[in-house]
Length: 323
Image (tube, rainbow, N blue to C red; front, side, top):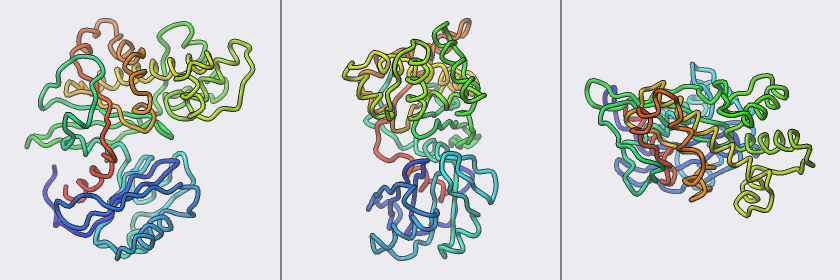
């Protein structure tokens, strides 16, 4: 926490991904988030358009402050989404909306900012390990893309979110089958980043790569089709695609833990993993997370959790208005 700012209410908070934009209203300090609503990004011409639609639909006045996380790097006034066509100037957007304060941050930095208010009921442990107080924390999660962020503890004992674009790191293989899949992805995309495999479209990419390797017919499947077929065990290629998805996610999570020294733990968010349920806990995720040679024992002591709370990124966006 860098220092308290003047509290401004009412406020609008948002979580904007490549597919959907989710918004909520907070009327006063300590008030619950209300009027949570989700809109397909493709239905709106701009960020301002979807915000104005939300306010009109719920008959809200112009808020004093707006804060939202967005699925892209936020490095200055100009913001351009990675997996959607929206682009805007933050100063121009603030002026168009007529609000006193506007905060735009990376969506996983917003998610990271919510972790200090999550309770035991808001997360599910996968594997063992115990968090070390005051040590860095990592958070990542597959959705439309792959978000990655961290939390570091300042001298005052408060955690500060650290945004990054770790979803675009180069993906590594841990066995020959994974290496063959990555070769197909490199051939197709040029660079086999983690996001090419570990996100919604990544599930489809993995399925199609496996079909190509095995000479099997390739069906036109959506990410939901792949996960459903895997859960029903009606398509063995989909089963393997989900297996690889969880394995690659564990590998990336382990790399994040090593990079940050994240002995405070690793949190997995996003929209896909919670829907896998018990299948995720039975997957290769934790094995691949720990499987780092001489640092296996180090990683075995780091806990990993799946975030099960509703709309935690909205909570984190609100916190960013106060810090």
